[in-house]
Each structure stands twice: as C-alpha cells, then as structure tokens.
Image 1 (cartoon, one colour):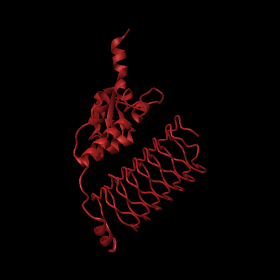
Image 2 (tube, helix red, strand yellow):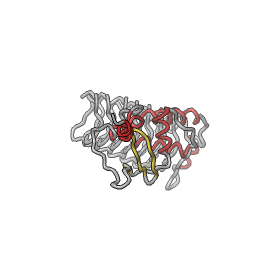
Image 3 (tube, helix red, strand yellow):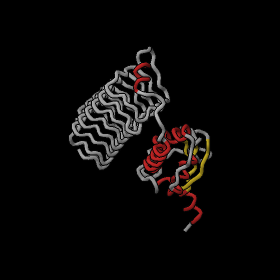
Image 4 (cartoon, helix red, strand yellow):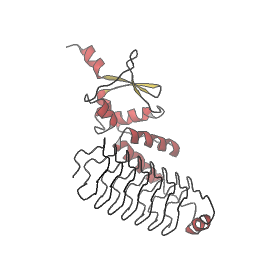
Length: 285
C-alpha cells in the first residue's frame, strides 16, 4: 500500500478569501456531517482546485476560519467579544455548522442577562418622532406589546429574554440581525419587514403575518409558527430546524437553500413555494 499517496489524498488545502489552511477530510466531515463543508468533501461533488497550488477556493472572509477548524477538530468554541461572536455566527450559518451555532448562541444568552437600556415609556416617546432608530440597543425583556413600530430601525438590537411584542405592528420596519431569542411576537404584523439574518430561535410567532418579509438566512430553530402567514416571504437560506409549522402559509414563498431537515411540513401550505436546494432530508410531507 502506498501510504504517502493515501495520506496525501486525505489532506485538503483551502483558500478562504485569500487565507490558506491545511486540514483533512476527516476533520471537515466527522463532527458536523450535515454541514456544507462535509457535503463539499464527501466525495459526492466534483471539487475545482486552483490549477497550480491545489487549493480549493471558498469566497468567504477567512478571519475566523481557524475557529471553525478548531471547532471541527476539538469540539471547543472560542470565547470572543460580541462583535467577533456575531461574525463567527454568520460564518457558521454560511457553512451550516449547526452544532457550533447552538454553542455560540447559548454562550451569548448566558452573557446577555443585562437590563434593557430603555423603558416602554421611552419607546412610546421616541416613536412619536420621525425616522426612529434603535440600532444595536438592548431592549431585552421590555414590553413592546400592541405598539405601532412601523418603519422603525431595530437593526442589531437585542429583544431576547422574553421581550413582549405581542400584537405589535412592525410594517416595513428594519430588524436586520435583530436578536429575538425566546421573544413573544404572537399576532404581530411584520409585513414587508426586513428580518435578514435575524435570530428568532425559540420565539413565539403564532398568528404572525410575515407577508412579503425578508427572512433570508433567518434563524427560526424551534420557533412556533403555528397559523403564521409567510405568503410571498423570502426565506432563502433560513434555518427552520425544529420549527412548528402547523397551518403555516408559505404560498409563493422563497425557501431556496432553507434548512428543513426532519421538519413536519404535512400541515403547512407550500403551494407555489420555491424549494430549490432546500435541505429536506427526513422532512414529513
């Protein structure tokens, strides 16, 4: 047996946005077998190497890729500042590293037990002004129920720890990368809202309206979307692992590359939905 040849074939050279790494196929496929990296190097797909160097190029920022490799090797997530943690979460989302994402989100929840920066009265006073922005503001646990928050910019804001927005109106609001973990949005109106990469994990979204909303790469793991209306919404690359979708309306929605593995879709309405490239392994239909 040519052990040199065998060793060489198991090694992988990666060029991540100009940063170069060397690892093995076992590292890329064993810990997170459902990830994009595992799929790329499973042998099921032809890989295109740089002709002279033999590196496989991936067009992503390589800043945090060493953390990804260390996670795949050892199962240990790094301790990072909040901005760096957010960046690593985006990379973990791109590579579909579900285990790493869960660890990072749990870590952020543990360190996020701080009081809200504003009160309900402060919010009401602010929304009477024009061009309201709460970008990056901590609103954890605050009562936003039944307020008209249309057009407000909540980008990167934190409304986790059971923040209450039941029955609120967010028409055309900006909630990009907003943190809604475990929040109550029952019956909220979010038509046309920008929720790209927002974290709605474990949130109560029962009876919500997301018609035409932008939910690309949103985190909806274990969210309760019972009776929710997502007609025409864009959920490309969204993660719906463990979500409750009883009577949810996805008519005409874009679910390309969405993560629907083992999700129960039997009672969901998917007429005209685009499911191209969605991961539906084990989904119940």
